[in-house]
Length: 271
Length: 269
Image (cartoon, rainbow over all chains, first blue to last red; front, side, top):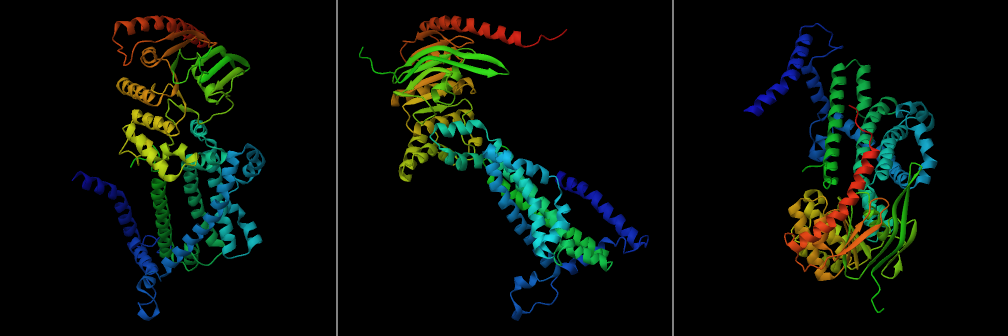
């Protein structure tokens, strides 16, 4: 009973805002181009998500048909760019961060360059990315991997440097050499930091993918909302924005599950 | 002179720390011999250098001057022949109980079947069976320290160095683990150097109690404890010894408190 009341309270404000919005639009107080009614946005969202043609068994499986609409294909394009760009960026940042964290000499050599490049927002690299890679997927991947690179790098360095000395002493005492110490003690001890970097990195990659799609390519969620604006389809713009939000939420939930599993040993993680 | 060579020989050890431009003599002129199979407690107030001495024997922090020989070899680096048990347990939190105990054996390259068997036997011995797949965070302090003891026993070191291992435990758990340690010591006959600031603990456990002075740490007196085990802390003999050792330690504790008071600025009123 108390839970139902709490649920009702938490829905109160969103529902009131939706109702007011619907009322304002229906009453014709604002142009539907400026602010379409939520019901209209919802219908547009269904149309955006739905398969374009009826299911034809001769042309492929039922599952493929279900995901043949415009929205699933856009979402797949955006998410695969995030995945690819993140894999490149994190794949470069992780080994560099491990070396910079563990070897003071490597840190001294690399840190000045890192500190100069790190504060430049990846978006500021757009003109250069287009000059270097032209249009299409290459500049998008470049920008996304750049966005993922620095969060993973900085957190990996911090993780390695902050390994509690007592684990190193205990491992040495049990006969661990440098190599074992690194792979079996330092790297696992640094995983909470590394995973924080991964989470931030994916978040940045997701921001960058939307921007990159508005500029360099003609597929994906970012491209679609800019395209919709050209036709003054503001209902589709909002439907696309909601889709972007849901995709971001999905990424975050998936990361959270992964984190919980990988850090199930960590005292901060209560099961 | 047909005495067997001592397991640990400390000669003229001096340790100086440089802190903020000032030199702090932590240890000075330490001479100590620990016989094979002996259980020796280093006792003194905070700042007497007992942990510093233990770390020097372990090979973590070599002395500034003097010599430490363990099992006939000069100590230069940490090694599995002098296994350390820490107050903070120092279990690897990302490994299960079983992986923690197996760690040293795996490093030694023992065959998998042997590792599994040895680990299972040790866990049973320390009443940890059934907890193989738990992570350290899910264990109580007492159980964590049992795992830490099992982890060093797994590599079968001739010497155990214990740095206030039961200091963070409640009184009942502590007594329980002290008895456990004595059982293990009786069974395996390890040489044990045990650092503590607990007077009763040292008298309950040790063959000899090495009372240390406060800054610089020197050997103030070595008190042999010949009471038969299991010792009764309520017995008149135990209490007589406790009074004697207390007097020695409290002299140093006062010096420690005076030094602390001189260091802290007095609160204004």
